Amino acid sequence: MNTQYCRRTDLLVGALSLALLCISLSPTQRADARGFAAHGANGRAGGFARNFQNGGQAAGFAGRYKNSAAAGFAGRGQWGSAVGGGVATPYGGGAFHRANLTGPNGGTFNTQGAGGYKTGVGAGRQGAFSGTTANGGSGSGTSGFKYNAQTGQGTQATSAQFTSASGKDYGGNETTTWTKGQGGSTALETDNHGSYDIDWAKGQKPVVTPMPTTVPVSTSPVSTSAGQ
Image (cartoon, rainbow, N blue to C red; front, side):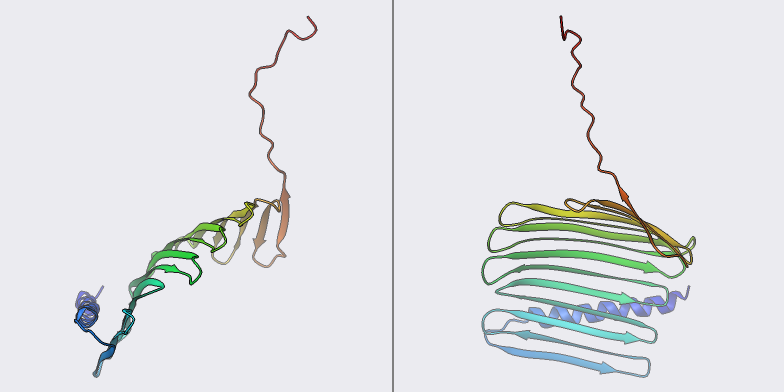
């Protein structure tokens, strides 16, 4: 790996992050907007920051150096806050996001996630969300995947559960495994619509197999005194 190239990429990301921080933290008592831009033979970078009269703030940046790039954003206001960013290079990269939001009528939504990849090695991601509605409903879920580029095998798992304002629960989960160039299979379980195994081998029509509902076996002791 070209360590000098990686150091230059790290310097780019660090410089852009520092510029974003300085701009976004600059004190101000009025609405204004600020920005910067620079470019050269091997890349370019730019960013902005804005302060709003209602107290909200937003800032972002983006930059590229040869075959590498980085970008990020951050904002906050009366409806909540959000932040995210990412970097991509020929050798690997990653990204993340986080948001905490409130609706005008009282609902909420929170989400966060992060992922990354390394060229020739693999990739992975994890994420989650939760929220409520103004009329009393709620929901939450998670998702993630892993991929091994050396074996061509990957797995993905997703789960979500919701409760309506009337108290009804619904949701389910899904687990998928696959191999590059061969296809894979999915196990799908739902709260109200059954469970299924789905085989989707490459070149074949997907085969859906309903799975029987598991009935818990009673562990209560059996009386032997009946009829006595």
